[in-house]
Amino acid sequence: MTDRPLTLMAVHAHPDDEATGTGGVLARYAAEGIRTVLVTCTDGACGDGPGGVKPGEEGHDPAAVAAMRRQELKASCEVLEVDHLEMLDYADSGMMGWAANDAPGSFWTTPVDEAAARLAELMRTYRPDVVVTYDENGFYGHPDHIQANRITSRALELVGATPKVYWTTAPRSMMARFGEVMRELGGDWEEPGAEESEMPEIGLPDEEITTWVDTTGFGGQKFDALAAHASQGENIFFLKMGKEKFTELMGVETFVRVQDTTDAPLPEDDLFAGLR
Ligand SMILES: [Zn+2]
Image (cartoon, rainbow, N blue to C red; front, side, top):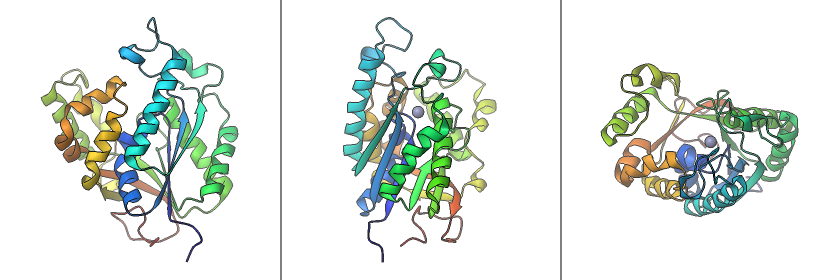
């Protein structure tokens, strides 16, 4: 019917976001013969350095961090059997309010049209049937995640009809369970007592989620992809859970369908429903 394989494109901000947010769907759809393309927008230079050195601390060398994270990203892509990795290589903008936000070359200060034109070129090359990125708040407000949403939205306008577009999200029911596991493992997720009020800020009520994809069969790959990014402190918490608990907690990936030409009924359990 078509002259090319069905294609999934995931647009992420930093090396490691592909594993936490979409590791399950990348692995599952690769296993189903769907071509997978990962676009990573930044170099991740504001991440932890070798030996856990935090940005701003002495010995944090952004170039060395970027080089290390590029290798980790390649390893993660091998685990997830990503067919094509495309790096836009903008400078990591750091968390909201950091000086890195406005540093020359930061993703956050790059004009949306400029970065979107590059992404649109990749969309013309790969012609994805399904595009996945973050919501307008970048899920949790990180400037690079917000910018990934903006350039993706603009690139989609530039290339015209893409059959299905999704934003990643997390169900509130899962966030609550996540908080419990955090406390069980002694993670410093938030100050005690803050969880109930803080957690509902991110994710969505379950009934607003349109798409629930079961990726429990790929939990091991998702875990191993995240393990490839073990240099990043925030990932170590997930790894502490062990594969089984991690898969139980993170085995279903959820999305909101924001663009669709297939009329596949909702809720759906497959990003490619209506396309095959
Ligand atoms: Zn990120």
